Image 1 (cartoon, rainbow over the protein chains, first blue to last red):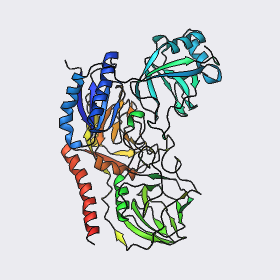
Image 2 (tube, each protein chain N blue to C red; image 1 turned 135 degrees about the vertical axis):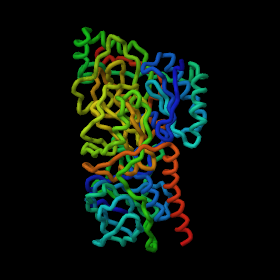
Image 3 (tube, rainbow over the protein chains, first blue to last red; image 1 turned 90 degrees about the vertical axis):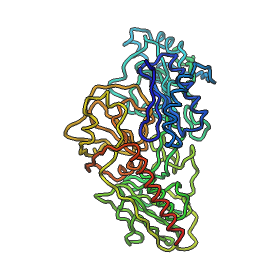
Image 4 (spheres, rainbow over the protein chains, first blue to last red; image 1 turned 90 degrees about the horizontal axis):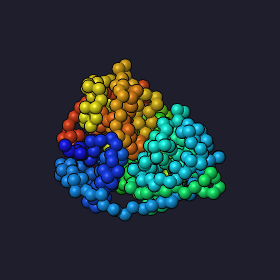
Length: 218
Length: 307
């Protein structure tokens, strides 16, 4: 059975989608490798990896039939190559006003606040994809012991720099916005600057490690 | 320069959009009717993709402090130059001190306003479009406000009057079948094209939300994937959302259809409580419709140069 298929979404979006909604880490790495090979072709205006797919926007839509086949060949050839992955160390102040949901999260998980901080900062995360806001990276995978549904009532304003968790993901809010994730900590890094090149600190595939600051719970 | 006397309901700087940054979560932004942007610029011999002002609903007022050839396209928001009616699809000449006002209209929702030589703006991430959610691009990363001033080169002399036919804005929108129809309840796509659908008041530049007596409710979830303007998502509530220029770059609702590129501009003029309906077409027809729009521009260019 084929593990992926390709199709055209609209007139110029070429999609390579896995037949699973929950790709294995190895499938995820192959998707990043596919993203890189598509980037090298220079045939696309935008290439957007997501949870279980890569979407590439054709610069010349009349080439779609060629690319529907070619993209599948590239997928089959794509190996878990160690492409140029950046690792970011993000210093975060956990708890108190910096992480207003930390105590509540700890109680709901039957853990101490310190245990939550330890679990959250011991994992190495990977940027699965970006979306929602410019520079907003979905970081997988959050340890099972920390997984919770989103808040039932979203906050009207989550401060810029908030380190948050929901379901099996963690994230940092690059700008203040409404949001339904649980806020554990705060960091001072600039995640998105439209005047910088590249504008986003994180790119798909990057690794992220949180380092608890002595100013907060650690 | 151009002084914003009243910003009206909303006016923002937009060009044909921002491309190449979707993997960082950066949306397209840009005019909801990029074709109208090209026509407005071509009326003034500007490069077709330069930034213009998109006026939403109206009630805006501007003052030219220097002489200016300008053009209007898009919907007719009953604009007046120094008290005299001016119409979309034409270029005009304003004297220093003239005011351009936009009223409102029951049938049109957006007008486009370009000046000869374009506004003096610095592109951000390769575009002058305003990203209204993230707050960058355009003029100070936000919608225009009373008191704002936009610079342009004063026009040395009045260009002779020139008009262009604008392709019609219709309420019938052509769509291609989407990738998740086999996951959605049977008949969802057919129900979408059977319509009609009413534009909800919760619609904005991120998306047009649609209402009907019979909704397309479901409990299907899909893995989050890339989405773009024109994609029609169905949230579990069953009210379809036609994604527009300010939409997020990824989405987790099943996709029932996509609006063809040539017809997405119709949503620039569909206002709350108006009805629209969808017609299925194939990729060849979609391409032909886009080619027809390009041919319209090419013909106008030819006619203008031979004049």
